Length: 401
Image (tube, rainbow, N blue to C red):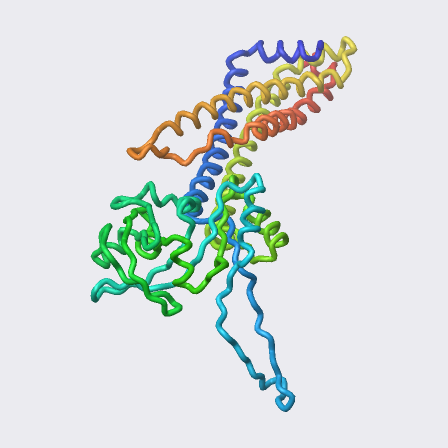
C-alpha cells in the first residue's frame, strides 16, 4: 500500500504531464476500439449484403459418381457407359425440415424445387431460373413480398412472381398471361401475380417464383424437392452447421463461404489490416508510457537515492514504477474504451436517406475487453525497463548528483 501511495504521489506531483500521458493512452485505445468496431461492422455489412438474399447453408442431393462398367470382352480402357436421366431429388425432405426446425441456431427453412425454363410472351423469349416454394415460406430466404411493386404475392395454383427487369424485357405486368416451358419439355400457361424489385440483377432479371405444387408437374417431381435452403441466426456458424447437416442427413451441404471465396479472402485480408493497425496503436502506447517513466526515473534519481540510503530495498522502487505504469494504463484504457464506445455510437447514428448508417460500424464489437487488458498489460511492460533502472540506482552516486 505504501508503494501504491508513493506511485500516486509521483503521478500527482506533475499533473499536467500525467494528464497528457493518460490522454495519449486514451487516444490510442480509442483508435483501437474504433478500428475494431469498423472492421467488425464492415464484415457484418458485407456478409449481410451477400447472404441477405441467399441461404447460409444449401442442402442438395449427394453428387453421384459414375460407375465404370467394363464388358467381359472389353479392356478396362474401353468402357461402356450407360446413363439414364433421373432428376436428383431429396425424397425425405419433410423429415429433414423437422430436424432443422428443432435446431435452435436455424432461423428459416425453405424446401424448394429449382430448375431452368423459358418464359414466352408473343415473340419475346427469355430464360429464367424457376424456384418453387411453399407459399407461406416465400420470404424465408429472400424478402420478396415486401418488395412487390405491382400485384401481390398470392401465387395460387397458376401464379408466378417475376422481377422488374424480366417484366420489362417481356413487356409483362401483373395480371397478364405468360407461357412457361421447363427443361423437361413441359409447358403451361401461368398468370403474373406480382412484379418485385430487390435491386439485385441476379434476382430481378433472372429468377421467378412458383408455388411448390405448381412446380411439381412442371419438373416431373411428384414427391421430393431439389434443394433445401437454410438461414442461420449467426452466418459465421455456416461451416460448422454444414458439416453437422452433411453427417446427419447424408446430403451435400454447402455453406455460403464456399460460394463466395473471394469475399472471404477479402474479409480475412481486411481483418489482418485491422490487426496491424491495432498493433501499431499498442506499440505507440507502450513507447509513450516507457519514455515518460524513463524521464520520471531520471528526474527522481536523488529522491530514489535518499530512499535507498534510508534502507528502502530495490524491490520497493521497482514496484513504485510498475504501479505507475499500471495506473496510467488502466485509467487511460478505461477512458479510451468509454470514448471509443461513444464515438462509435455517434458515428452509427449518422444515417443516409434510407436510414442506413453511413459508416458500417458495430459499437458492440469494439474489442473493449481486449483493449483494456492489452493496454494495461502493455503499460506495465513499458514500465519494466525504467523500473529496473530506478531500482538499481546507487544511493551515494544519486545523492552526489
